[in-house]
Length: 261
Image (cartoon, rainbow, N blue to C red; front, side, top):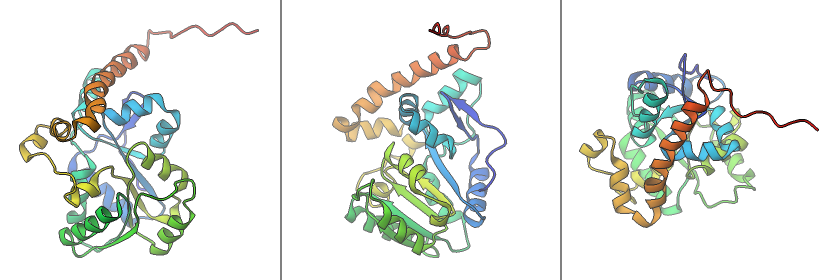
Protein backbone atom coordinates (compact mmCIF):
# COMPACT_ATOMS: atom_id res chain seq x y z
CA UNK A 1 0.00 0.00 0.00
CA UNK A 2 1.25 3.48 -0.86
CA UNK A 3 1.82 5.79 2.08
CA UNK A 4 -1.07 8.08 2.95
CA UNK A 5 -0.64 11.75 3.70
CA UNK A 6 1.37 12.29 6.91
CA UNK A 7 -1.68 13.66 8.70
CA UNK A 8 -5.43 13.54 8.26
CA UNK A 9 -8.23 15.94 9.07
CA UNK A 10 -10.92 14.39 11.24
CA UNK A 11 -14.40 15.02 9.84
CA UNK A 12 -17.03 13.55 12.16
CA UNK A 13 -14.83 10.58 12.99
CA UNK A 14 -13.43 9.93 9.50
CA UNK A 15 -9.82 10.84 8.76
CA UNK A 16 -9.47 12.66 5.42
CA UNK A 17 -6.07 13.04 3.74
CA UNK A 18 -5.43 16.72 2.88
CA UNK A 19 -3.83 16.28 -0.54
CA UNK A 20 -3.67 18.97 -3.17
CA UNK A 21 -4.16 17.90 -6.78
CA UNK A 22 -0.51 17.35 -7.66
CA UNK A 23 0.23 15.37 -4.51
CA UNK A 24 -2.92 13.28 -5.01
CA UNK A 25 -1.93 12.39 -8.57
CA UNK A 26 1.57 11.38 -7.48
CA UNK A 27 0.13 9.30 -4.65
CA UNK A 28 -2.31 7.50 -6.93
CA UNK A 29 0.37 6.71 -9.50
CA UNK A 30 2.64 5.27 -6.80
CA UNK A 31 -0.27 3.16 -5.54
CA UNK A 32 -1.09 1.81 -9.01
CA UNK A 33 2.56 0.93 -9.64
CA UNK A 34 3.48 -0.34 -6.19
CA UNK A 35 3.15 -3.62 -4.41
CA UNK A 36 0.28 -4.50 -2.14
CA UNK A 37 -3.04 -2.72 -2.38
CA UNK A 38 -4.36 0.78 -1.74
CA UNK A 39 -8.08 1.51 -1.43
CA UNK A 40 -9.18 5.10 -2.03
CA UNK A 41 -12.60 6.44 -1.10
CA UNK A 42 -14.16 9.90 -0.99
CA UNK A 43 -15.94 11.81 1.76
CA UNK A 44 -18.65 14.32 1.03
CA UNK A 45 -21.48 15.58 3.23
CA UNK A 46 -23.77 12.70 2.26
CA UNK A 47 -21.16 10.01 2.89
CA UNK A 48 -20.30 11.62 6.21
CA UNK A 49 -23.94 11.40 7.27
CA UNK A 50 -23.96 7.72 6.34
CA UNK A 51 -20.75 7.12 8.29
CA UNK A 52 -22.20 8.83 11.35
CA UNK A 53 -25.15 6.43 11.36
CA UNK A 54 -23.49 3.24 10.07
CA UNK A 55 -20.56 1.81 12.02
CA UNK A 56 -19.72 -0.75 9.30
CA UNK A 57 -19.52 1.98 6.71
CA UNK A 58 -17.38 4.13 8.99
CA UNK A 59 -15.08 1.15 9.51
CA UNK A 60 -14.79 0.62 5.75
CA UNK A 61 -13.72 4.24 5.29
CA UNK A 62 -11.25 3.78 8.13
CA UNK A 63 -9.58 1.01 6.12
CA UNK A 64 -9.10 3.29 3.11
CA UNK A 65 -7.29 6.47 2.17
CA UNK A 66 -10.11 9.03 2.13
CA UNK A 67 -10.07 12.15 -0.06
CA UNK A 68 -12.13 15.33 0.28
CA UNK A 69 -15.09 15.70 -2.08
CA UNK A 70 -17.09 18.91 -2.15
CA UNK A 71 -17.63 22.11 -0.26
CA UNK A 72 -19.40 20.42 2.65
CA UNK A 73 -16.33 18.70 4.06
CA UNK A 74 -14.36 21.91 3.56
CA UNK A 75 -16.89 23.72 5.75
CA UNK A 76 -16.61 20.87 8.24
CA UNK A 77 -12.82 21.18 8.32
CA UNK A 78 -13.05 24.90 9.01
CA UNK A 79 -15.66 24.56 11.76
CA UNK A 80 -13.87 21.67 13.45
CA UNK A 81 -10.22 22.61 12.95
CA UNK A 82 -9.95 26.06 11.34
CA UNK A 83 -8.40 24.31 8.36
CA UNK A 84 -9.36 23.76 4.74
CA UNK A 85 -8.62 21.09 2.18
CA UNK A 86 -6.20 22.25 -0.52
CA UNK A 87 -8.03 20.37 -3.27
CA UNK A 88 -11.59 19.33 -4.13
CA UNK A 89 -10.71 15.78 -5.13
CA UNK A 90 -14.05 14.43 -6.29
CA UNK A 91 -13.72 11.21 -8.25
CA UNK A 92 -15.59 12.52 -11.28
CA UNK A 93 -12.77 14.98 -11.98
CA UNK A 94 -9.89 13.13 -10.35
CA UNK A 95 -10.14 9.83 -12.24
CA UNK A 96 -10.01 11.32 -15.77
CA UNK A 97 -7.20 13.66 -14.66
CA UNK A 98 -5.27 10.73 -13.19
CA UNK A 99 -5.65 8.67 -16.37
CA UNK A 100 -4.26 11.59 -18.38
CA UNK A 101 -1.47 12.17 -15.84
CA UNK A 102 -0.16 8.59 -16.00
CA UNK A 103 1.83 8.10 -19.18
CA UNK A 104 2.77 4.45 -18.76
CA UNK A 105 -0.15 2.17 -19.73
CA UNK A 106 -2.39 0.84 -16.98
CA UNK A 107 -4.86 -2.03 -17.01
CA UNK A 108 -8.11 -0.60 -15.63
CA UNK A 109 -11.07 -2.75 -14.54
CA UNK A 110 -14.61 -1.36 -14.36
CA UNK A 111 -17.38 -2.74 -12.13
CA UNK A 112 -20.83 -1.22 -11.76
CA UNK A 113 -23.67 0.77 -13.37
CA UNK A 114 -26.24 -0.49 -15.86
CA UNK A 115 -24.93 -2.77 -18.64
CA UNK A 116 -25.37 -0.19 -21.39
CA UNK A 117 -23.81 2.55 -19.25
CA UNK A 118 -20.84 0.34 -18.40
CA UNK A 119 -20.23 -0.31 -22.11
CA UNK A 120 -20.46 3.37 -23.00
CA UNK A 121 -18.25 4.39 -20.08
CA UNK A 122 -15.60 1.88 -21.11
CA UNK A 123 -15.61 3.34 -24.63
CA UNK A 124 -15.45 6.89 -23.28
CA UNK A 125 -12.49 6.07 -21.05
CA UNK A 126 -10.71 4.47 -24.03
CA UNK A 127 -11.28 7.61 -26.10
CA UNK A 128 -10.10 9.81 -23.23
CA UNK A 129 -6.85 7.92 -22.54
CA UNK A 130 -6.32 5.36 -25.34
CA UNK A 131 -2.90 4.22 -24.10
CA UNK A 132 -4.57 2.50 -21.14
CA UNK A 133 -6.51 -0.77 -21.38
CA UNK A 134 -10.08 -0.68 -20.01
CA UNK A 135 -11.92 -3.89 -19.18
CA UNK A 136 -15.61 -4.04 -18.28
CA UNK A 137 -15.63 -6.80 -15.66
CA UNK A 138 -19.27 -6.63 -14.53
CA UNK A 139 -22.24 -4.31 -14.42
CA UNK A 140 -23.63 -3.44 -11.00
CA UNK A 141 -26.57 -5.84 -11.13
CA UNK A 142 -25.03 -8.89 -9.56
CA UNK A 143 -25.91 -10.42 -6.20
CA UNK A 144 -23.51 -8.70 -3.81
CA UNK A 145 -23.81 -11.66 -1.43
CA UNK A 146 -22.64 -13.97 -4.24
CA UNK A 147 -19.64 -12.11 -5.65
CA UNK A 148 -17.35 -15.07 -6.38
CA UNK A 149 -17.76 -14.93 -10.18
CA UNK A 150 -17.00 -11.20 -10.32
CA UNK A 151 -13.98 -11.60 -8.05
CA UNK A 152 -12.68 -14.54 -10.08
CA UNK A 153 -12.96 -12.51 -13.28
CA UNK A 154 -11.27 -9.56 -11.61
CA UNK A 155 -8.36 -11.72 -10.49
CA UNK A 156 -7.92 -13.02 -14.05
CA UNK A 157 -7.79 -9.47 -15.40
CA UNK A 158 -5.03 -8.61 -12.87
CA UNK A 159 -5.69 -4.86 -13.02
CA UNK A 160 -3.52 -2.00 -11.88
CA UNK A 161 -6.58 0.13 -11.17
CA UNK A 162 -10.11 -0.97 -10.22
CA UNK A 163 -13.09 1.40 -10.47
CA UNK A 164 -16.19 0.31 -8.54
CA UNK A 165 -19.40 2.25 -9.27
CA UNK A 166 -22.12 0.77 -7.06
CA UNK A 167 -23.15 3.94 -5.22
CA UNK A 168 -22.66 4.71 -1.54
CA UNK A 169 -22.65 2.97 0.86
CA UNK A 170 -22.82 -0.21 -1.25
CA UNK A 171 -19.53 0.27 -3.11
CA UNK A 172 -17.43 1.05 -0.05
CA UNK A 173 -18.89 -1.87 1.91
CA UNK A 174 -18.48 -4.26 -1.03
CA UNK A 175 -14.86 -3.24 -1.55
CA UNK A 176 -14.07 -3.56 2.14
CA UNK A 177 -15.67 -7.00 2.43
CA UNK A 178 -14.57 -8.55 -0.85
CA UNK A 179 -11.60 -6.94 -2.57
CA UNK A 180 -8.25 -8.51 -1.70
CA UNK A 181 -4.70 -7.68 -2.87
CA UNK A 182 -4.92 -10.19 -5.74
CA UNK A 183 -7.84 -8.24 -7.21
CA UNK A 184 -5.96 -5.01 -7.94
CA UNK A 185 -3.30 -2.62 -6.72
CA UNK A 186 -5.33 0.60 -6.63
CA UNK A 187 -9.06 0.32 -5.90
CA UNK A 188 -11.49 3.23 -5.88
CA UNK A 189 -15.22 3.67 -5.26
CA UNK A 190 -16.45 6.16 -7.84
CA UNK A 191 -20.22 6.56 -7.44
CA UNK A 192 -21.87 8.00 -10.56
CA UNK A 193 -18.64 8.38 -12.56
CA UNK A 194 -19.66 5.85 -15.23
CA UNK A 195 -22.97 7.66 -15.77
CA UNK A 196 -21.10 10.92 -16.27
CA UNK A 197 -18.53 9.37 -18.61
CA UNK A 198 -21.30 7.74 -20.67
CA UNK A 199 -23.27 11.03 -20.75
CA UNK A 200 -26.20 9.21 -19.15
CA UNK A 201 -26.26 11.97 -16.52
CA UNK A 202 -25.17 15.52 -17.48
CA UNK A 203 -22.55 17.35 -15.49
CA UNK A 204 -22.94 20.87 -14.20
CA UNK A 205 -21.42 23.75 -16.20
CA UNK A 206 -17.76 24.35 -15.50
CA UNK A 207 -18.41 27.60 -13.64
CA UNK A 208 -20.67 25.79 -11.18
CA UNK A 209 -18.07 23.08 -10.64
CA UNK A 210 -15.41 25.69 -9.98
CA UNK A 211 -17.67 27.28 -7.38
CA UNK A 212 -18.14 23.79 -5.89
CA UNK A 213 -21.89 24.04 -6.34
CA UNK A 214 -22.44 21.07 -8.64
CA UNK A 215 -24.88 19.67 -6.10
CA UNK A 216 -27.30 22.52 -6.91
CA UNK A 217 -27.28 21.52 -10.58
CA UNK A 218 -27.77 17.84 -9.77
CA UNK A 219 -30.65 18.67 -7.46
CA UNK A 220 -32.31 20.73 -10.20
CA UNK A 221 -31.92 17.87 -12.68
CA UNK A 222 -33.06 15.05 -10.37
CA UNK A 223 -35.17 16.63 -7.61
CA UNK A 224 -37.29 13.57 -6.84
CA UNK A 225 -34.23 11.39 -6.31
CA UNK A 226 -31.87 13.86 -4.63
CA UNK A 227 -34.00 16.22 -2.55
CA UNK A 228 -33.54 14.24 0.63
CA UNK A 229 -29.80 13.96 0.10
CA UNK A 230 -29.27 17.69 -0.32
CA UNK A 231 -32.17 19.60 1.25
CA UNK A 232 -32.25 17.42 4.36
CA UNK A 233 -28.77 15.93 4.23
CA UNK A 234 -26.76 19.15 4.04
CA UNK A 235 -28.31 20.70 7.19
CA UNK A 236 -27.98 17.32 8.90
CA UNK A 237 -24.27 17.30 8.06
CA UNK A 238 -23.79 20.73 9.67
CA UNK A 239 -25.68 19.49 12.72
CA UNK A 240 -23.37 16.47 12.96
CA UNK A 241 -20.31 18.72 12.60
CA UNK A 242 -21.42 20.99 15.44
CA UNK A 243 -22.36 18.05 17.61
CA UNK A 244 -19.00 16.39 16.94
CA UNK A 245 -17.14 19.62 17.64
CA UNK A 246 -18.60 20.06 21.10
CA UNK A 247 -18.58 16.34 21.94
CA UNK A 248 -14.84 16.11 21.26
CA UNK A 249 -13.73 19.27 23.06
CA UNK A 250 -10.98 18.46 25.59
CA UNK A 251 -13.07 19.85 28.44
CA UNK A 252 -16.12 17.82 27.47
CA UNK A 253 -16.38 14.81 29.74
CA UNK A 254 -19.17 13.16 27.77
CA UNK A 255 -22.08 11.25 29.23
CA UNK A 256 -21.63 9.39 32.47
CA UNK A 257 -21.22 5.65 32.22
CA UNK A 258 -24.21 3.64 33.39
CA UNK A 259 -24.05 2.08 36.82
CA UNK A 260 -22.82 -1.47 36.81
CA UNK A 261 -25.19 -4.07 38.24
